[in-house]
Amino acid sequence: MHNNHNNNQSSRGRRSTPLADLDPALTEISRKVIGCAIETHKELGPGYPLEIYRAALLYELKHEEVAFEENKKYDVEFDGEVIGSVTADLYAGDRFLVKIMAENYEVGGKERNELRATLRAAELELGLIINFGQRRLKDGLVRVLNPDALRTDDSEFENEEEGELVESSEE
Image 1 (tube, rainbow, N blue to C red):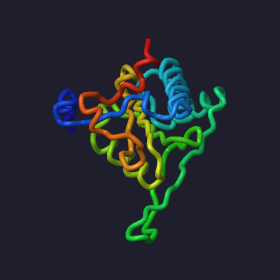
Image 2: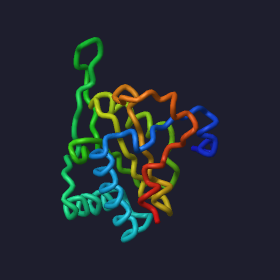
Image 3: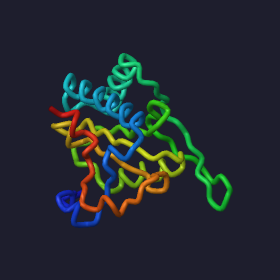
Image 4: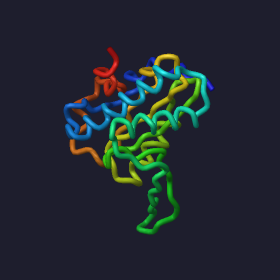
């Protein structure tokens, strides 16, 4: 699997919404989750199996008193009928979804699309992919938005790139 396209994201028309346009309570919870992920990655580094990162992240979330549900299921409807369900790794702070990974490659379109589909089923606006397999965690943090749930016009933000969610967390 080659992910050489990641450097060309903005030229492919990828759009993003600045954090300032999201609900401040939502961004505060997402910053806490990112802080917990950073602590987890600082302590463990890359290379462990997914279950280790998941357990450590859950420990950190509990320690920081961030409410969450594991393996939350959402119904998928088609033509008004429930045809199945999808499962989110975490539903954090009663506001957004988290997908946890431990892969030694950059997060690609497949993972983004899966989380975006789960966001649509959950009718939530924000999701976060955390890939603990990256050497630098900031390379493994990806914000995913559900355009159907956003209250803003995406066309205002054509020149922005994904990933600014972690800008203030990495110092």
